Length: 254
Image (cartoon, rainbow, N blue to C red; front, side, top):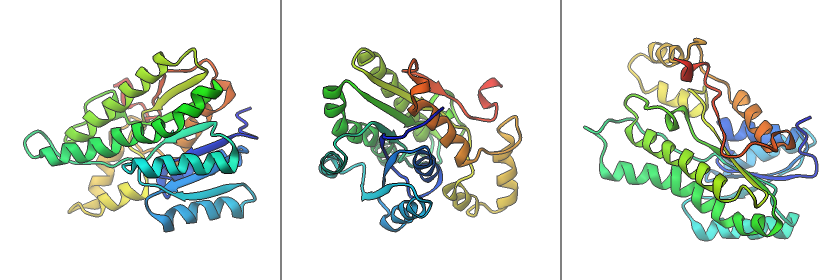
């Protein structure tokens, strides 16, 4: 079950954290994974770890805001592999702020990466998926795409938009052989989160507060989100489209 053998997959923002875990999980499931990230060193490291385990991975530098580069990557994958079966839109950024202290520039920047970035990459690969009547798209949103998260105005707005984009694509193309789903994680312990915690006056207290948000009393692990992505990407999820999976430690049950 959950085999991706003979499948090709692309994961954006795969240099670390959730993206890296998804890329490694997909490769171990048999996929040829195209690892993309703005950070060439981090993306290359992910691809090299996969290759060292005997699986197949190729790194391609990608800034999701660069539409020309998105098209270049799509052409490169078409030339190398023939087509792309699975697209995981994981690249994104966070932002702390309320209406009081969030600027218009903050809103534009978060929207550009978290929403327009998903659109840009999907737009580059969508014509070939549509022509083949086959494709799986997994968008990494957030529990903030379903509920308001305190002090995360711009981020919450952007992740609600990702969920909306997911559902719109799913309903428009349900009969075109293209499945589109989203994952809405709770707080996940990633290198990015760890770096932000170190900025607090009391990192341990901040860690405990973030962990307590989830009824399970802990943050998630990147590998737990990757497992959800593997399910949605696999043929076992063939009747899922427009779905939002919520690996969130019980956050949504409160």
